[in-house]
Image (cartoon, rainbow, N blue to C red):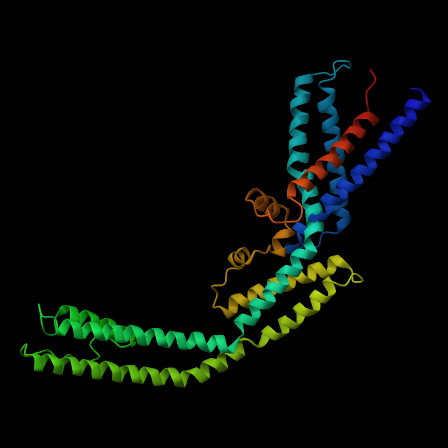
Length: 356
């Protein structure tokens, strides 16, 4: 080997190291982010050692794969080498290195903007969930709905009694009266039944007046209970919302830090993700366990920062078309990760090229 060729191989090896460093850094970052939510205490240097070892093995597999097609060199069991090296490339690169690299690039681009949008949205959701006026309006709406339902049932009872085809208190009138009792939170039969002895108009009018009086009397009792309970309901509402203002203060502070270029970025992003999870948990408590953060985020047109840190979630969402509105399409970062790795593997192959 002449000096010129030797220097060229050294140059190719150094280029491989440079591209490999970028790729290994990306994979390490992706693994650290993905395992973030599992309270792992694995030091980052452990990731580096494992990733570098796997990357060198991947580069070696690509070299073996290329060599299996090189007719100018002797390869024992050429077809076996081709298949085994191809499997190594699929497992180590297609399913591991390339996806994690694309994830890191995408995360670095989207993390700050995603956290800001998410926290602003959660700030608004917390404000709505802790609005006393809205809560009382919803509380009164329940009563108004109940009152409408009871009065509708009362009208149906009277219509059935006055039915010219089958006048009197029959089975349909009984059905609607039982439904009215249910709306009034009474047991069936709580309102004494008065049935017509005959079907004269006077008798029918008296029976209708009787049920009108009884049902409206029960409705008035329920209305008084509702009004009495409004004060205690509001007190309970205020008690359950005590933590909301603290979370809103944290959101405002974190948003300032995210927009401050002098503050270290990644710890602030981690802080914002933890805060978002606490906000989602608080909203779920406020809404009685029926708050769905995935549906809420989708309806609001935002992406959850907690999903952004996990490589598997990002790829699943990419295939489901969740990133159509991002500034850069995800395939851009896939292409970049492929270019970096292909360049590294090409330099590795040249640096260690056999000269049989």
